[in-house]
Amino acid sequence: MQSILIGGTDLRVIERQVGGRPVRVALRGAWPFDDAAFADALARVIAAGNAWMGADATSYFVPMIPLTGAETGAISSGGTGRTGGFALASTSNVDFDDIVRLLAHEYGHRWFGGSLGPTADPGAPEYWFTEGFGDFAAARTLVGGGLWTEADYAAHLNQVLLRYHSSSARTAPNAALAERFWDDPAAMQMPYDRGHLFALALDRAEPGSVRAALLLMAREPEIFAAEETQAARFIRAYGAGPGRFDAMLAGEPIVLPADLFAACGTLEWAEQPIYATGYTTAQDADGRYFASVEETSPAWAAGLRPGMRYIRRVSFGPGDATVPFVMRVRDADGERVLQWLPEGPTRVRFQRLVLADFTDAAARDACRAQMGGQSAGR
Ligand SMILES: [Zn+2]
Image (cartoon, rainbow, N blue to C red; front, top):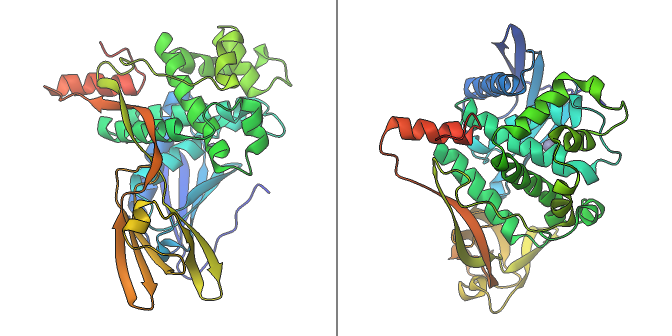
């Protein structure tokens, strides 16, 4: 259970040193990035993570397993934690920025769901901490470690905010999310985004407080009861009383203060149509086809019809109705490319970080420091 076996005629193993310890990656298949760039990114992620958590260097092994699906436009990536490493699997069309974010999230499991204490069993009721606070820490680490610029961070945060405000699971209590975790993709994503945004709001009230509580948990495990779970430890280590967490756990919407990143820009409210592709697909012996198309949808207006064959999703913006959906299809008339805006019938109101125009390098550095959690930035 704690191993990974990878092999093949095209296997490459690359090693880097981080704090005097070997960090190895293993890759198969063709990727849009260099093997060396992947190994370098992992080494930097590990160094930044160790610095953020005040942890010793340790040996690490990360295999990268190629998934099929990119040929039809499917995008998928994920990781599985193992002792002394984690296994990644991804389609080859995932942006390198997303791969770097995934590396930081997965390395964070050295602590979150790892060494910070026992985890709940089953774990889903505490994913707001082990996954959501893990996402918060990963983003801080990436900016603090220089792997993300302020624009990278803002783009990522805006993706989280749009997904959060668009989600059908946004106001579901934590216990209901845990119950639906494996059946409902919205319920599965929500603990990550809710925990991440809640951590930002919590840290905003007292800058550096979230990291301070995490460091206390890492450095002084003896002050906690042996069986006390990580999430319970955090609530106690944070010291604000469990009441501070109740509204979040009950599903009360999280609104970030407009000046959360005052050194960077403003969190503004925006509104746009909800994301909806307008179709469903099914599979038969010849592959994938469109099973139904909403007649009032932009997809229908663009010419998409039930029965057409699904050749390839050329491009789209996941969850974002303002990015054109470009689809290659085939019917009796042959193959062609259809394009539409994936606008659903309702609208979503969401927050987004709009970066200021920086006048000089010092202003930009102050923003990055604030995003990385180093200081209030002013
Ligand atoms: Zn995770």
